[in-house]
Every structure is written in C-alpha cells, then in structure tokens.
Image 1 (cartoon, rainbow, N blue to C red):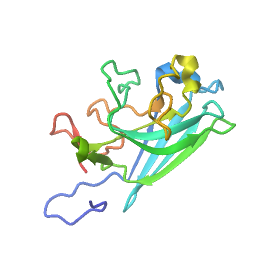
Image 2: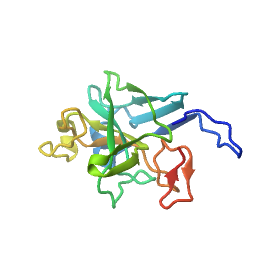
Image 3: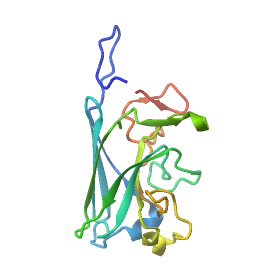
Length: 200
C-alpha cells in the first residue's frame, strides 16, 4: 500500500514526483470540439504524487464553448502512440468515472482530482473474475451524444460514459507509450514482463 519509500536492504527505486502529459483529440470528432479560434484544442494533464494520494489537474483550451464532458481513467486508449486511431482497438477495458468537465464561454475548462493515480490506480471485481486491472489512461467523453452528431456519431446508440449511461464518444484521450504500450499514469514501467507492466 505504501505511498512512501521504505528502508530496504537493496537499492530503492526513486519515484517520479510529477507527470505532465497531453491528451489527443480523437480524429473523427475533432471538428465537434474545436472552437474555430485558429488554435487546435489542447488538454494538459498534470499529476503530482502526494503521500496518501495524488492530485490531478486537467486544463483545456480552444474547445467549443458550452460543451460538457465526462472524465474517465481507462485501461486502454483507442489511439496509437502517434495519435491515429488504433485499427486493432476493440474496447476501452476497465473505466472509472472521475469528474465532469464544463467548457466556459471563452473555450477553457478545468477538472481536479485527488485519488490514487500514478503507478497504482486499479480496480477489480471477483464477482466477474476481474483480477486487479490498472487504468493508466485518461480521457473525456461528450456528455451529450448530440454534440458529436455532426461528426458522424449516431445519438441513437450512445455510449455508457456518463452518469446516465447515455453519453457520446471519446473526445480527447491519452496515447500509449510507443515502447511499453502503457498509459501515462504509469511512471515506472517493468519491461521484464510481456506485455510490459508497471512497478507499483
């Protein structure tokens, strides 16, 4: 459980104290989030490790004013490391609803979390034989499926990614590391396993 370093007989791994990364717009739905300011939508995630938990701040700008989104941590991304759609993607795996994200009149928005995030975020459910599963990706979904209709999303077949389980598609999401395949909430990859895992 420890979030602090313990005295040990061998070398102790130094923990990364902070991780900052960008989210990438899902290509198909870029035009439905863009505010047409001339600047591409951007989303920056900053996570700071604390003694008992971690603090995450998501800051977005150049997003269409008035949109509402739902922020999740996820097992998998639907994008490749280069930001293109993964042709082998099937589903997002385990997903945790973390926060709402509302866009202001000037096209900006902020969401803040305080929970276990870096290297150790996971869920499990023995009722369905789900073993401990990490959710090292971060992404946000259109709260209203109609907001993505102009980009080809069918509002009659919503996704479950909001509190009412009637959301639109993923709008922006993190990409996997090109070498490890892991999401950015893993700061200490373990390359001795196949696929790569994360040192807790």
